[in-house]
Length: 373
Ligand SMILES: *Cc1c(COP(=O)(O)O)cnc(C)c1O
Image 1 (cartoon, rainbow, N blue to C red):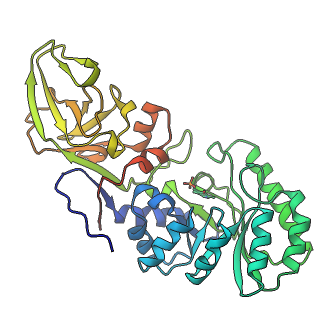
Image 2 (cartoon, helix red, strand yellow; image 1 turned 180 degrees about the horizontal axis):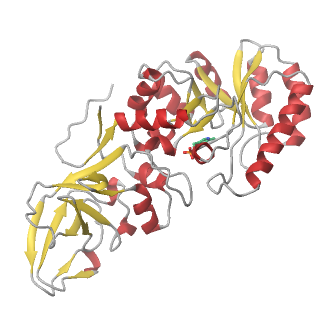
Image 3 (cartoon, rainbow, N blue to C red; image 1 turned 120 degrees about the horizontal axis):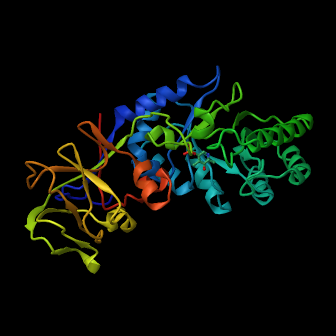
């Protein structure tokens, strides 16, 4: 075991387990009868800490969680997580044995991987989820792969399909007819497998965007990621889920500077009046994107305050001239709620042309995650 890290810096990501649980239940309520929710905890639960959230998923009786890498699944198992885990990404041949020993379900997404799984299953039972490519052209079997896949499956009595799935390319734009096209292609491939006598297990297709827009076939399982963390899955949406992460720090230093003084690298900010500048112990090495310089705001005493000057590697400077009573040690919110104000991941994403997913996953490992009930 690595020694436990010591934290003295007041910068941290507080993860509110109650908000995660609330989102999980709210999403579950939107599902058709007999549909079940799989929580996607890849990339350390989108930066929220996969172990603690996997424990919540166990308490909430989810049928399964999903991660991208077998390494992520192994880490969860080693931390005592016992819930079924699906690996969405491709596994190398050498990882299959470890995965099976640890009760980790591999996805099979290519003809080569299916041959490999079939060979592996000569010696032992193997349950897989089979990915079909319904149009994203990234992962999964395509219609022309199906005949040889059917042969391989028929020749492998110990290889069992626990589930079949596909992934939407553009569910975040719900009126795109391509969503229905993908579903039709998926259903057509399913029908071919079934007609060949292959048992297809459970089916899952929908991501967060498809769930919140009701694009879930009755009985299908769904794979929810961003929505569980309170991120908005739709391009133009107001799903009103509860943000789970509060990324906070505290004012380390305050100073009053004269009109005409500059702040930070490149002298990009100049005081147009006598100004109060707060220095915060957080920077781009913590995942606070340097491109947020001159664009983003933070919350201090329930009020918005703009960045002043460029984001440094370890430090951030903020113009708090208009925040009455501001003091060293005051809590500063980079992401999340404070008083009546809140900064959502969508807001930061909008400043720099990205999506809330990346705002969360960019919060670096230097920022401790503190899970609270
Ligand atoms: C990441 C991922 C998801 C979750 O997507 P969200 O938009 O975050 O809900 C679902 N399925 C697959 C295959 C994924 O890679």
